[in-house]
Length: 134
Length: 72
Image (cartoon, rainbow over all chains, first blue to last red; front, side, top):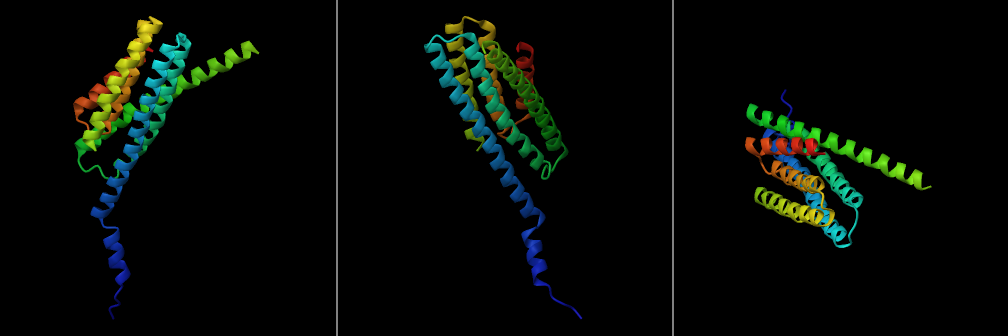
């Protein structure tokens, strides 16, 4: 006896490889765009703050703080972009694309590591300054 | 989206020039100015990496990250 299971064929249609590839591709683009937007907004904010600081004759320390503020935006944007790299591994079709993805992920991971290190060092410095002033 | 990201990268590089000049004029510190410019160029490189990059873009981004690390 043959039992028809219509829900299975519709599920196959819903989860077909091509469709899944499309969903993941859309997600990759969205997450990547979010990371790019964060980086761009950070760059605009940092420029405004650099020009303001220059106009108000601020010190070198102030410029370094603004730089690290930009670093924070870069680190946050990178987190999103690394997430999109992980998603991309699910749909990278050719060996060359996988190689490129690995290179990009390595660059982003290295930059993220050094940015977080710089931010942690700056935080320690600020806390040390505060302790000295108190 | 690729065109938009490429345009964003170009704007980022231009903003970097403005910021580096502002720091140089006020702070008179060449190293800090170069670091600021490199930060913005790195941001531009990251935007370019999000825009379907070729191997040249990947190599450029790696070089920028390396230069940023050396100058730090």
